[in-house]
Length: 377
Image (cartoon, rainbow, N blue to C red; front, side, top):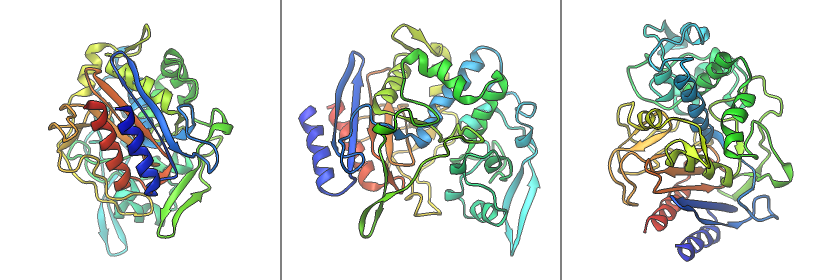
């Protein structure tokens, strides 16, 4: 396995897939692979403690924090969230445009935590919705990367809550709910409830050690170009959908906790029953997500040919994959082409990190699939 993955990374580097990568994998007994190829900043090599923007891999961590509050009885998965998130209760649904006029109507269905976690609440991302992108642009609504509450509070929903399945900003709302329910900011709560118990010392809403930071690069017709990207150092709003920075080592630790039934190294973060319920399907089956902004993302299809749905922790496959991924494995990714999977029984878990845009790079998806297959062989 080690030789195979080493060769896969070296070949991808030679083919110009990205400037550098780092892969880690574990089984029930511990870490079984940890190595990289290329550089993180043009000079220094990638390492298991390289700090990278996690982007949407933030979502699974915030989901665990929310489910902990469900276990504590602070919120119910199926109760309306209007008292906690009045801005969301007052949202409108954007049904389209009549010429230059947006068709907006009030939301009819109360939004629940289950909807927000399973991407069935109607919240969207502009890069997947031309109408939402137009509305945000014409109304000067901040993007999610600006980490301002207005980015979600002033944006309409793109369909009636509970009536469909999409991918969007639901976890931004979840992060806000966690903060309001606990009476402390999301950064503090995640540190005390998730990061400290797991020893995730490098994961935070901010850069733990700038000397270990990986730079973001864009793939262009002229090759790889460094992008001067960084989230605000003092955000107005901690982005529960994409604001965390972290390392391959930290994230694999988080995944191993999920695979071990919510317990890691003596610390129970989530009860086994709550975790089992979170891992089942909570949405309709879907396939390719068409991108409306090629500079941000390719069309998203992380498991081509395999039907998938949303759990409360991330995407799950509804059929066994060519990589022999069991049905129900939780997986997802981040906007700078970081990827993960974790089996519900803890048999295997893995991450592949780089810092490359646009998201869903087909070569990166292929590399991730090949690495997973090598781990499972």
